[in-house]
Length: 193
Image (cartoon, rainbow, N blue to C red; front, side):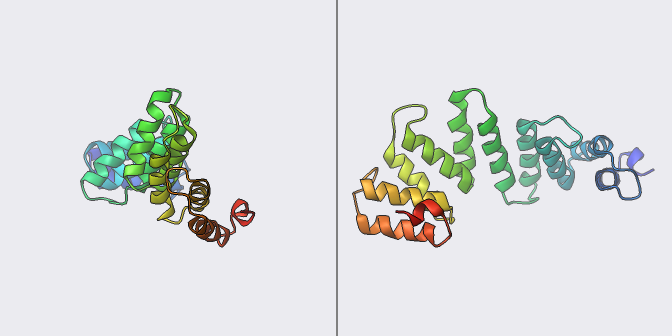
């Protein structure tokens, strides 16, 4: 009853009940409907939840742009200041983007939120010259950012950069160090270097 009277917390709670089959039959569409009502009233937990509904296509059509918009509204209110969800949405959007000119832009937004998978993907694009000529300096910069967070492939690729002097001064000792760090995490390609 409170949900029908525009009580945002009640709407959110009812939406969660539908999403999680709590006292009602599971219905993602109805769950998303109620959660969206609460989100539109500015209720931050609902905004974050509706963002996930958009990202995962649970009760709503998949839309990373909508997911990013709602998650940003929630974080602007101080709810879930961990920006990894937004960064993941940017990254997932980049991987599904058909407009090549936007891919690096989306990855850069995610990388700037300190999201290691995006930093690694962006580094690979720079290294391989996916959209232009290779830029090894930028590749090393983003490999380092991802490696600082323990990203295994980034550690391995830094080893390659140091071994062959791509974007850095050639240094076999540093190459071995990076290969060993990746190998210690059971990254098989690094175990062969």
